[in-house]
Length: 341
Image 1 (cartoon, one colour):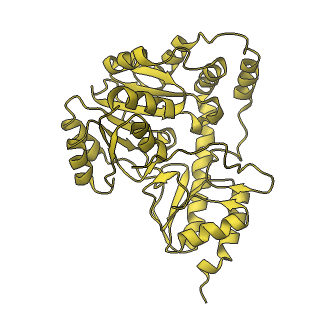
Image 2 (cartoon, rainbow, N blue to C red):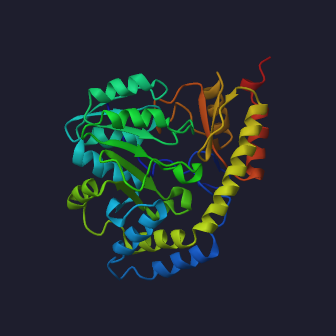
Image 3 (tube, rainbow, N blue to C red):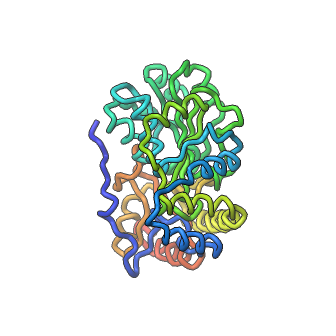
């Protein structure tokens, strides 16, 4: 299977006049002032080595309800995925439930694993693929659908894991209010998280939660100073001011519901999302995405290699503020693909 190696510098959607409905988390929300001040102070500490990991692990453990020994900070959620796949799946077999964000497939693939891609909509297929694999990767909520992971599927996977890792990417779980994390982690369950929904994706901070024995194994293989001084300060700031972040999530959810209502009014099919993006189905999805791009409005379609297994009739649009959303919906309403003669 050919690897999907994306160049993060190749696509600049922050140009003047561009409306980005793919990557933003909270472009239309200001960073809360206390967090911004903490980040500004951290930027003045670039002449020091980072020594705050113990405090970060303590704060993360308190945040998700586990002991600090069950948490491992990493360079973003992608760093956690890579470390887990390098440790447990290198040269082996991995099953990835699709559709899935490309890194869930690329992380085992770049570490030499043979990857199968069962559809998450077919739990029996996921279970069958896991029986033939050395580990399985899933996302909760799913990217791009925004649907939650079926607890029955997770329970079924853990019931047959027998020492093989069940890796769950929870990049959007904070907003969804869902998590597979429990105070006493199952020995084979590994949860990967980041901080994109905490308004600090540029800090490249993430973490992994698992049974302390698994975390200790990973810690031996991880490079030292996993988080730089800015990332450490950013994590501690958002966790210290988590009520302010939760207020931002409430606004994001309201903006998402507004976007979903507008998309539903345009036709097609829509299933309410538990993430920060809407997933809208329309038979002319690719034509609509192309027409929007010509107007410098960018949405995620099957033509972009960001999602493995993205159906051709799906569009994913990240929630934006109401003014931006109304502009996009107004433009969509005029497109020929939505107004056949």
